Length: 338
Length: 268
Image (cartoon, rainbow over all chains, first blue to last red):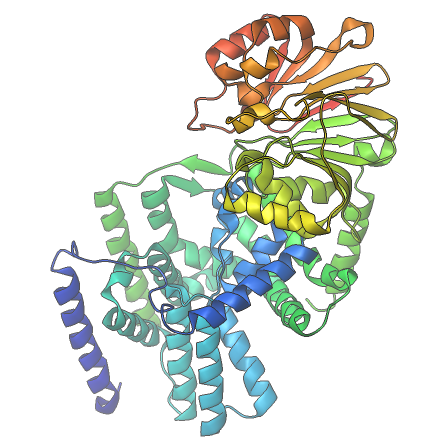
């Protein structure tokens, strides 16, 4: 990395470190995390009304849990607690993470805007796309995974604009430092921890699993399986440590169902937005009902197995040791590859 | 992926539409005590696929069960009954009204202060609704429902005691649904004449709580099957050991927290 890019990087490390130290202390015991603190006073009435109307539309045309799934993947609304049996199903098969707005949503909105207004290599177009995705991030609750995805996406997009290829690992770390600069309390957010670990895991281990699974024919299933296995490397210990369970079927269920999420996001998002303008016939909602129902059916099927999930709570020392070893291997292998 | 999408949609449409269930392929009456956690939701499906839903449980789980019974292009329930407005009976019904059309709602207007009940009453403005009291009878596809409680004009500070108690009869099959009616009320309910003096199914009052246990009432009805709708590891301690022991002395007891949804089919 050239000196010109190292300076802001080092400054962010310095300021983020100072912010964390002053807010949380050296042992992080003073950290406080407030949910949705960014929404307060940021046009929360407008966003609140939009989300309320979207909820009414989704619940009119779709049954539960399909309506809650759609609202989760398009607007980041987590109402699955209202369907406790299905919430348990998703936890058991390890697919609870799909019901959030993620980096995919941010890049999808960005691509749609760019497709509408023209090339992202024009400053004005890029700025507009950035502002729209920022508002989408606000609309979807501005949760830590969305903030991280928005910051990462912004850095990559502006990097491309200035002709700089930026490594995914550096962008991820930079994004996390910026987040800690804004709110050190994110350190305590489980969704932040999981989002960071999943992304880091993807960056470090995707190539390894691509190599291991090279014998499989190229397909969406193979791509999703590689992504799932890669992400699980750093995520499963945290889930075990926090919830005391490990899902055995999670990689398989994720690989079988992940393809339904982008499809449901695009189609469901279009139907929700369209319904704000005109009343759509119920039959049209089948286009999003089908992929959501396939997701539900596969999750329910695998959750019935008595081997789907078992109780395992990793102790803190073992937890720490695992991450040291696995991260060490991950960085070492990456360095060797480069 | 794009090429196989139409195939996936087509397969889903066929499997969802043609998936066999009792309501599609049999001429039997089915009573399902749904596993909705700590709450009550009973779905009755008549031989001609009319659906009667008694209570909706806490949360939205009931909507999934109802969706599985419906064709893709509509959601219609013939009759919805609310026994009383506690959230563990009302919450799911409120969700159902957001999504499904209902032919008739049977619910009594009671004095009860909750945001959910206020929202429900707002939903009822556009619905066909009737109040029901002792002596009222209604018939759906040959299935007869008789209201055993409450009497018209009856009031009680305890909303549980305003629960609508129903006797259902079809082709020699008798069932009793008691909502959360407690023992002081059950003692005043006249046990009806069951076919051949046998009550096949008793939906146990108040999730098996000890205050829903009335010895004389149960000795009068002597059910063959007792169904307790209760959530796993609930904080209320339901069902009470005393109630379970008493019922096991006279009937086969089934619990949703142990077995999931309980299905009773006439003729089996």
